[in-house]
Length: 62
Image (cartoon, rainbow, N blue to C red; front, top):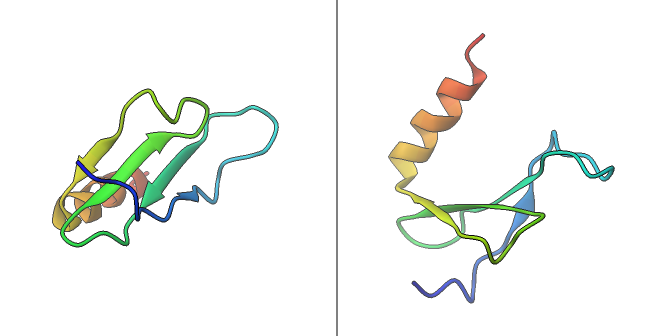
C-alpha cells in the first residue's frame, strides 16, 4: 500500500512526555490509516471511513 501522500496527525489527547501516542491519516481516498507514533515502521492499521467512524464512536462511549 502506497502511503507516500499520507498526512499524519497526532491524536489530540497524546502528550509529548513519552505517553501513548497514535497518529492518523485521513486524506487518502477510501481509507483512514492509524499507527503508533513511537514505532512508525511497526505497522499501520487501515480502516474504511465507515469503520473508522464506528471505531471512534465506540471509543467515545463512557
